[in-house]
Image (cartoon, rainbow, N blue to C red):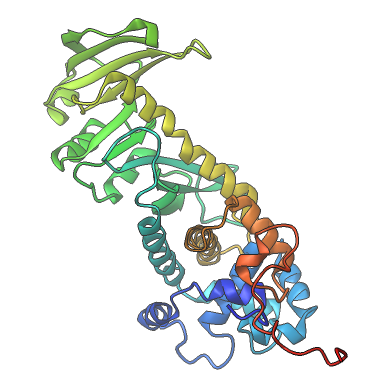
Length: 389
């Protein structure tokens, strides 16, 4: 890396710009555009996410304060807030969704050998959604309640990383189980989800595809026990049963046997009952898999606290989705850089340091070492000192 370039510019080198231009051409993003092309829009939106800009005016003021460094960031001139607002309004949000998908695929390849602590060869996914509250008068398209607007972010998280492998942004009224219709089941993979996804017709689609699921049972589930397996109650397990559904529609939608596992959490004394179609894994592993589902809850908490997806720069559906997908791109980009440079810092620390030093001319790998950067290789360290006689 060139130590004479800003930190932000070096981060942008990890974007696959050839693929970027191909995606932009597919959606006509730069058609009849003379100024502020899609590449510049992405850089500005990524900068806003990295440096925690709160509004369009904030973005304009921050970039305008460093006019001599804009060219090094890939910007030809200062960006007016009206120009950015128009671009977010008009350019298809699918451009940014496709770019995020490319970065996600790249990140998942880097983390494919990471251990999630369960000694499993299967890929484990956690499926959940989070609701982002909006003002009804400003976002009337985001249907949720009569007095409130909201959008939902449905996420399938690969627990290795953890990296989101699928994201769908909908209005607040979309039920969680409907997200199962949008996922292409992966044979042999394990899908862990809460009981909001218990829809036997959709779960049977996963089963027929050769995938496994782990979820919690609903209180009113109608079933009968076929067989009980022995369990070690000292581990917190209470039962391990093979069951058949009894309800007319439930039995019709899921005609195969299911496995029902009971567990009492020794820390909270909470009783949990799990439902799965996997009959080979130990009952204790089934319980541990559901506990690992909390990674997706932590993911939602992290992006809400560290990226800008709760306060939006525009009020249209296109502007909101543009901002969400650029935030996802920044998350995947941070994960890629952390892995490729073998940085021993958390993603939180990575973004905190980057937010403070974006305009600084320092090598990317050196910025996250902490302490004195004097030991970093400087391409100009062999230059003679003018005053050294």
